[in-house]
Length: 100
Image (cartoon, rainbow, N blue to C red; front, side):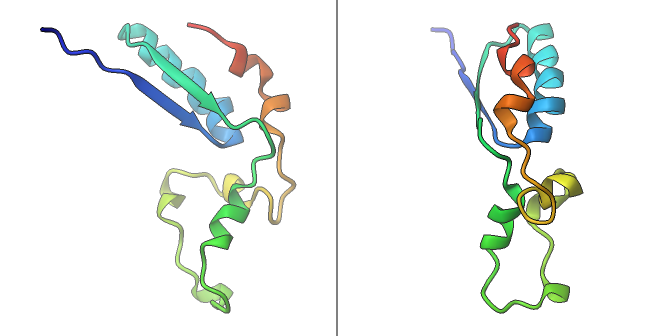
C-alpha cells in the first residue's frame, strides 16, 4: 500500500502571498508535490492580531516580541496598527490566480 500526503497551505499575510507563495510554488512544482493554497483575501491586519494577544496594561517597552517575529517582517507586524492594512486579495490577484 502506498502512502499519500496532502498539503494544505494557509496564507494569511500580504508579504506571504506576494513573496512566499511564488517561491514555495516553484519548489513544490520542482519536487512534483501537489498542494492546496488557502488565502486570506481581506485586509492584512496582522499587527492587530498580535497586539490583541498581549495582556491589558502591559507596558509597551516591556512587551515581549511575538514568537513569529523572526520569520515575519517588521512591516507585516505593523499592518493594521501603525501602517494601513493592505488588501491582500486586490493587491495580489495575479499571485492568487497563478497555477502550477
